[in-house]
Amino acid sequence: MSPTTVKSHEPRLRADALRNRERIISAAREMFVEQGADVPMDEVARRAGIGNATLYRHFPDRHELIHRVSLHVMERIIDRAEAALTEESDAFEALRRFVHAAADERIGALCPLISQAGDAKDHPDTVEAGERLDGAINTLMERARSSGQLRQDVAVGDVVVAVTQLTRPLPGDGCSVGFDGFVHRHLQLLLDGLRAPARSELPGSAVTLEDLRQRS
Image (cartoon, rainbow, N blue to C red):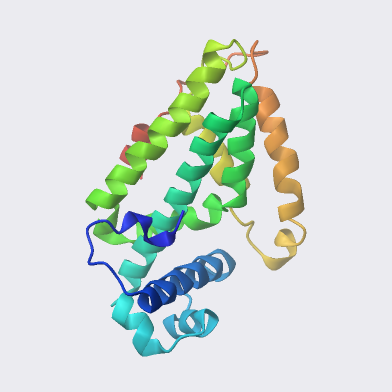
């Protein structure tokens, strides 16, 4: 899905302006993953191959850029959830496909962006995207649960927390060497733990996305 899909409340852009906007969001997403949200704006412009004036014309401040990158990532994850739902006949295989695809979006590295976006997390676009994401993952999990393949004591938040933690960069340069190569291996261990029948009783209760929002 295009990064501008979430821009339904904004004026329609010319083709060249649309391309610049997409390049900025793509470059910012890459650099936020690599260096964090404090990366200099002029470096984002340089990575995107545009001038600073063009960047600020589209995104007047860092909070707006972070907000739009966050929405872009959420939309991409929603796309992957919906694709898994429609293209996989096996319910647990659909969930497995989505979990690995969500990891490829590096949501752990990008998760801190939402807290740095200030009031943007309560923006109607963000709320709507969050509800769609919640619904898509819930549907994936409910299908797997109804088929008898997913344990009964887990919810959307449990999966989101696990994927987020596994894709969050480890502190220190030495710890991050080769880190990406282990993510999908460990995700498969997680998925094995989600399968029914459950082999142990989990402490606490299943976590929803609303639980995560209230604790953030």
